[in-house]
Length: 479
Image (cartoon, rainbow, N blue to C red; front, side):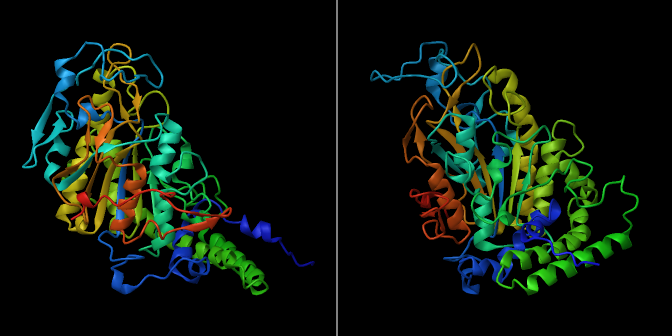
């Protein structure tokens, strides 16, 4: 029998599904990543790469579509006082909207009230988040270069307006590696209704090794991880047959590697299958929410139809970071004109259901993390791609606005109960201490012990960074 000698391309494409996703920590934990030029971390840096880290893992809550800042957090009396009047910011400033003609001044249809000792304004639509304001640090004057969903989402997630660049989670995976031998480093939990704008481009590894891309997991699905188990139709795949197949593939890969010992991807691929086998044992336990107490399920709203989806994903995020996942991204809202925070048609009708679905789970996540001591080294981030306009679109909707929006942080290294920046009297444009997406990413990396100016990869003749050539750490919100 003629020996079979598959090509290098065949070997490099032999892993799919779980195997490809599982390689993240293999590159990041051993000599493979070191061979690609990533500096080694010192134990003196508390897990950081360039300085002592305050956070070791991140949960990012992303409100897809452009959450309306003046209806949620940025209280402006002028919108109430001049409701229904022509929007005129003065100074002969040009006023335009992304997809519509500017309408009349539109007040928030739901009251905002002050909460906590810090007196932070929060909408009545978010009563559970409001209880935590003294633990949050608000970025009240965030800005975006665009008011278009696709580029805006790329910018907020990858630092660039165009596709093809690594997501923040991928950069963190590349820089710091994994905290677990049995689970991926960067996990994405999308809305059950669908992927966001740009689809998987928001959590791509870009020009970094593909192993650092976000592993998409669907906790509400019958199979949260694709290809974790053989399909039910494959009755011929017994446990013994699967073990024999893995053993054969291992022998073929190692024989191939023996002649090509300078190809790090091959060795990593071998390890990926070993990791995949370990994940078959560890992953089902990580996603089994039935192991949680009834009180915990009730806290997150798991058994309530309104909050079940987002609550399940927030609870899954806690379970994942508890088990060593480095970066978890939880999405609220699918791409498209509905079922998200893109409230063009009616703030009155479209904003409340998004708030009802997310408010209790977010409050539960903060409460749960704090009670378990996990908030001491976990950073929680609430973000969106841009904000909304202070004037109406149609009768009661709002158009896109990159001029100002709001985000907040909580947990490790964050100064509690503070607000940084301010928008104008309309919440139309940022006017003081604005925070760019580059500043946001620089601050996130700083808390993880990474200097954003030193984390770079040479690609196509340029030293590429998450923050491009911009950004500064927002020290005002750090403890």
